Image (cartoon, rainbow, N blue to C red):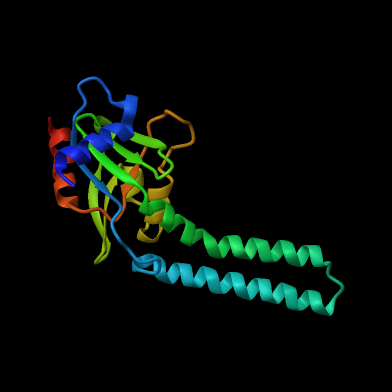
Length: 192
């Protein structure tokens, strides 16, 4: 896909949300990464093991006592949701688009919800290499202090994104290509 076509597609994604005089300088989507890669893999496996152990322990105890079957069904549903949450989070991340303009950093989720952070609000920016396939750009000092195993969460749920239309306080561009170029552009915009 040509650079012009990608820019047109992202301008289409931004639709009427382009600011006056705004120009797209850089763009990327979430690249390929594995569910259990990097700092996240061990954390996910531990979460799954604890969830299964606790659920089986409660169900085993319920067999000895007269536990209602409704409670067991509810526990199994909760266990299923906990086990599926990292899979759903990865699926959501894979549909995200990231854009840097001359005025802001923009994250567009797969559901086309747009989160942005004005360039002048970015007080810190750095690259974190989570795994060989996962290079992330962290924007904002509140994000750069986060542990690596939480970066997928913050990429899927931008910091300070409680209200629609409100600028966020931090963004994670997850598993992106050309992260060095993006960091250089942010630094240039901050210096201007």
